Image 1 (cartoon, rainbow, N blue to C red):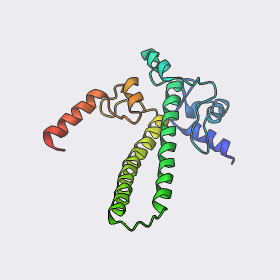
Image 2 (image 1 turned 120 degrees about the vertical axis):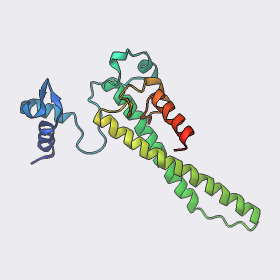
Image 3 (image 1 turned 180 degrees about the horizontal axis):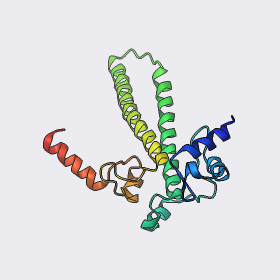
Image 4 (image 1 turned 30 degrees about the vertical axis):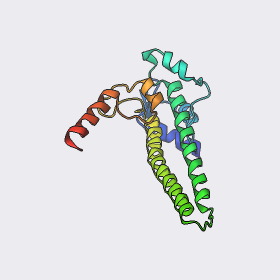
Length: 185
């Protein structure tokens, strides 16, 4: 069985809706059409008919268009760019740390070691951010991106533009931070 027919079978058996019917009731033709827009290998890419939006267009969009295909594609691209930047920085750090400079002066050696420690701390923060980025991409794939994990309310476009990995609405985040401050959690 080829990859395309496997994807069509997966789409037919999944819980996705295809033209108002459950996927397992859909015709093979509609399942094949659905499967043709899914990438089998590599990152998923929105169908070619989706317009690439700018930040201004997303901010001006009406509420009824919240997290439509074009907006999801915008945030997927932004997250993938962030992911590539972090991976590129990690590679540069590895190369930088491999460079061994013999310095006879203890003060200079201490400065170099401190710079390396700072760089490693920065990469550790980026490693944690990378995990959040990958989780956000999974949320886009599952259809949960843009909605608060606690309340299910929309997170909001301005917040997602400022922090694309946000999983809580501003109100839910404030409640969590207040609770942490009060109870030290």
